[in-house]
Length: 588
Ligand code: AMP
Image (cartoon, rainbow, N blue to C red):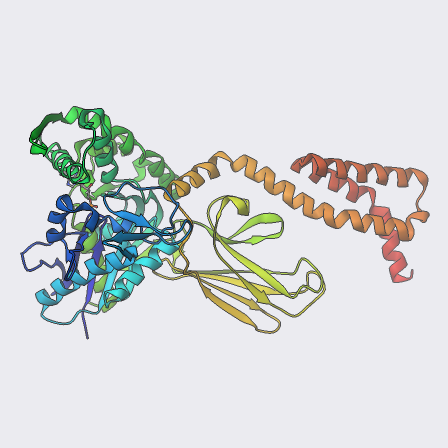
């Protein structure tokens, strides 16, 4: 049987590993390197170059060299614009593509080329065919991004046995030699393109994620962009090639400044015959980087809040991702979590080692370890009045199955439209639509149809929806495969807004629910008055008329709580009317 490999498909670099005699090891390529830059260069003829060879071409031919494909995977055109050296194409709203030498590539095709190279390196190192893999993704990847990553693996000829969240993988690598322990740890993962924070509990071999948060568009690349944009490096009329050279030199300076106080940037023959030389100090770099590093704070706070923990409850904070080598990031973590961060893990390798351990768990090579991960965002469907009905709340342990019964709002209705939503807000319009489908059912009186909707999130974090008419057994199973129209600024904004608007949202919800009640109540009262109103005295009728007017006024004002109160008052005022109606119906 083919071995299962573990792959860290990174924004900047990728790695591959396999279990060897019970230990996870990372595999080197033909040049003896374990780190493969996630870069693909398309020459005018012949096969694409992948890895270091492609990286060298980036400064020479930026337009034909694709990097950071992970930033675009599972995304649509029109979401936040990224500055990249190559062309992005596609119609607004369609999945994002990259145009190189007149040919369009999907991000997953580019990722597949990287995976193919890793696979070939592993086959050379292991001396056997490799067809099965575990691939990691940022914890905060949504459904579409996970699907697209799985698709990249399949394009590279790999069966993707499991998609694992990066910080969870890093925690596995950290915790493998502490299996007997009981502890709570945070994994702070700041890579090139993404930031994730996860809080886990270890208990005798069970690794349970308690909460996860993050931003799939926050990382070292943002510090690089901010450096280039700084006035210190403003040079007019730079060619794309010169821009790429400058970027590369600045990134190298950023790395040097993790261990030195000053870095000299020298680019001979930079524009024409002119050379370029500047000195960058660590203090200057920190001034530029600080606002970016600060953006991680809100996510850390939210993850702690979701896990119902304070920094003092944690036993360790593990740093992962190349950007955590920066002293400023370590200082931030120290302040935020009030402790010295744990740097025992090699920040470049922990995720790939964890992916390899997960591969070992699946193949049986690693025993007595159980991994329980969570889903980052709530999932639900639209119900009456434009409300989001949450079926699986965020931070639920996966795999998970949950369902609810729904009924028809209108008599004789023949189908129900099921709109699947992701997000943290009360109203449908504030969340994202993942997809929708119709389930036909037998016509029935209002409230009599029984439609069960079940959501299942598999161990990869991918959603499957099942809807069934429980009377006829007619059912539909739907995998949500379309790219989701979700930008990460939007994810972040949504989470912020869900807190900010919690009060407002609640009052919106109260209004919608009260309105639904009035819509039932008013026609029922009118009908009852027409049928048996003559049996009431004048004062009773006047009171009911007044209560009806109050309900109508509250509807017109759009006020939730007053409408709720007006409904109750109308209900009370019509008690005798209802009794007379019932007595009449019973013939007593
Ligand atoms: P990763 O996605 O984990 O490979 O992290 C890559 C990011 O880490 C890139 O933005 C790199 O520029 C950054 N990085 C790598 N090494 C260092 C270093 N020594 N100091 C600061 N940043 C680094």
